[in-house]
Image (cartoon, rainbow, N blue to C red; front, side, top):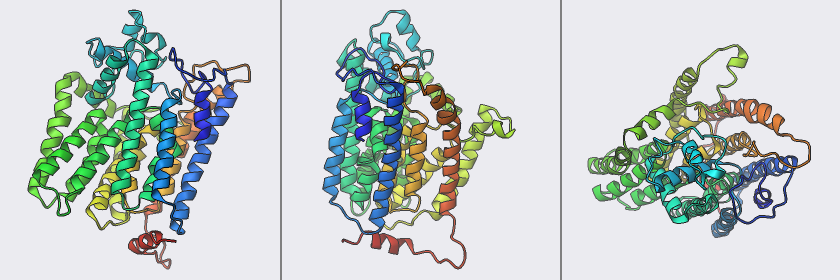
Length: 470
């Protein structure tokens, strides 16, 4: 993680956008140096997490609190250094500025602020200038609150949003420490995971807000030892609704709670009522445009989607067809995940297993692939028993992260040879798309039954061995 933090500290570059203020070394680093730092961070970070997960299976048991405090320290550092790896938070700031000015971010585009000479819009990123907000109403309200507190300064709004993202990341870590059956594994997957720290804290992506609310919902729902009553389920459902108000895919994380409450009609009714009031209610308050954005996003396609190679193989396809194939493949993957994922004994693990299966199936073959979307599945994976796909999920995150590095392609960089044309085309687009598709297939294949004559160890036995003290 130190490599990523150092890249941010160097100041405006191909990974740190200009924001009109802040503190840094103002070193004017070359594009070559930034590419080396960020790509090395991804490779070493993914390898370190996978080696840690492997060591756990071999009996390594470090103190969970040591990992927790180490991860929280890294979170604080990355929350304070300049924004890195993305310009999305600057877009959040613009949509928040619209809200603070009384404009509807679903009806207004950043270009209108630029044309009006707004001081925040002076640092608008090149992308999304003609696009209204694609985020949930709860996210837009949070952006507006930050903009209202920070005033007419892009740097101050971005800094406040990064602090908020760091606090949300830390909250997830603290809750996982309390409710995960194996907090050491949970901290490896989340708290001390350099790639999650980079996406959620250094990059400040709003998905971490949804992740924080989801883990709170799990903590509330699973606390009663004899199962949740109507009121507890209502609170948990309200939290799931808030998470869905941040981004709609977080609604799916509530399906595991519904599965855990399937034998209790009062609990199911409480969950449904809570989700309806806060989730659907937030979209209703935001107006019809919020629902339009929700449905338009379902047909979106990202540059790194795993279906991108089809035209190169001679299969001509539209974006709509890519989306349809992605969701059809996701339905098949969902059946495989529910069938073959490690069975869980307790309510917490069982709920997380179902939620992870649904959300992972949604992401694996989705035509919309962004690494920060994985904030939806990593807390759920951390709440489950260990699986044979833990490492593959981490390498998938690594591949997706490479697709969006260094993060600020329009920056000119220093006097060294510019590697960006090579990074933008074969690496960011084609190589990453191929890697995401291959890794998605490997994840599915890893869950299929082993060959005959090779008896597999029972998951429960494997888990007990993994949790044995040294």
